[in-house]
Image 1 (spheres, rainbow, N blue to C red):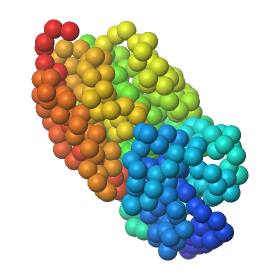
Image 2: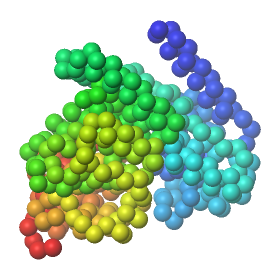
Image 3: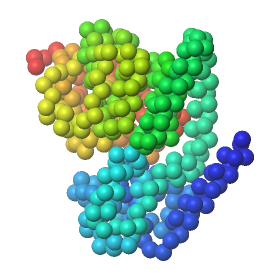
Image 4: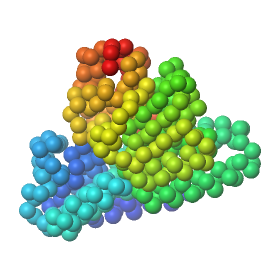
Length: 362
């Protein structure tokens, strides 16, 4: 078994080097952490010299340089024969590919499978973390489920895995981003561990309405559903919402609502407030200035409510947007109830904080 894994990895490595060995200039699409990982994967293959820069859909909203390479508005890149490496998946990949095709680029390559497995150290660290977590979850699950229930759950897991694989989401492409222990489903980020780590049982109440921005498959929401009044999850990726609604019906989480909506559009039409808001590593992807994002959260949150706020990957640098949002909330009277660090997938280091809004008049 181990030998087959090694062969697969070596094959991917050879394919990656061959892709980067073509004649012409190479550009990575994006300027955030996903694009940086693609550059690292090229460096690990000894081919970073082939990367001439990064391209983005809007140069004005991005830095001028990343890792000392230029960031170029793709509309201004005249060389249509350039090789464009797209490290995104799911709905983002489809949008990017459509834009590149419209602009006349014909050497466009999806590189998700390379960046996910080739970066040095990551495959083993992911495997070790998943192995330990899966064993622990399997023990708990098997101790509480009958053989008939386990067989039923297995068939259901296969069904929703097919939906996930067909949708190829950005977060959850290789396996589910969140675990859902009550049906025996493992994921990159363990749901029960996160609920315990954030000490959610200390502030979740039966009378509360919850909002989860960028809820992914909503497994965390369905796990806490019995502790609260309602949960609303807003998610941009259609395949993830399809999974969420299937699982919601399967486990009868009737007080959960999952919406396939763009957050900006949803926000403009929303007319209610919430007692708790989850913002887990989503703020960067919404393309809002930190002050505006923090103010939107404030408008959505009821007096005395809680914000569960989580940073993006801190392995490479500090998440400045995270710190800026915290500064805004502190300045308008939010109080920190709990904070700490989490590396629940064995790779990505994040900060988290639980803040409470004061009781000033709305």
